[in-house]
Amino acid sequence: MAGIFISYRRSDAGGHAGRLFDRLQARFGPRLVFRDVDDIAEGDAFPRVIQSALTSCQIIVVVIGPNWLTVDYAGGARRLDNPRDWVRTETAAALRGRARVIPELVG
Picture 1: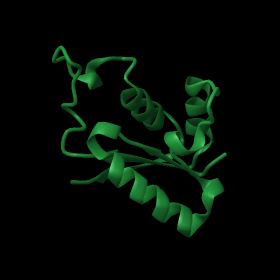
Picture 2: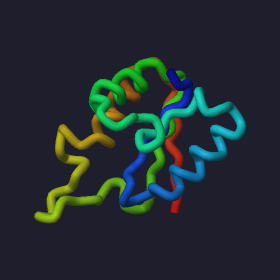
Picture 3: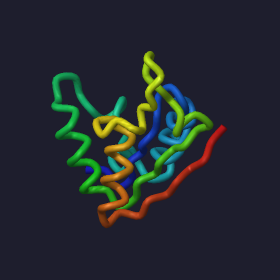
Picture 4: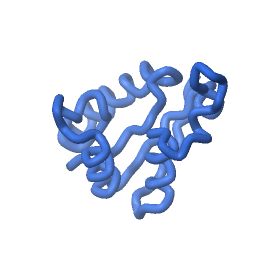
């Protein structure tokens, strides 16, 4: 599994995360960098793959764009307040784990 996990909100920093992914892959190789849209195959169980990647990585980069905290659902509720929000889940798991967590502010 990868050594670097990239967590991000697609609607907030998807482009930044993609460029970061490309740069990290060029530096460390494709097997050492994990990003959901590139590394989860069709038909794979998304939660299982994410959990496995989070627990096996040594570094977790949390890409934080200008709306990371305030991205909401159509009804106005913040996504971050939902315990099932993937970014919240990934960030919480990263902070509980042994990996080094690197916040990357973009935008």
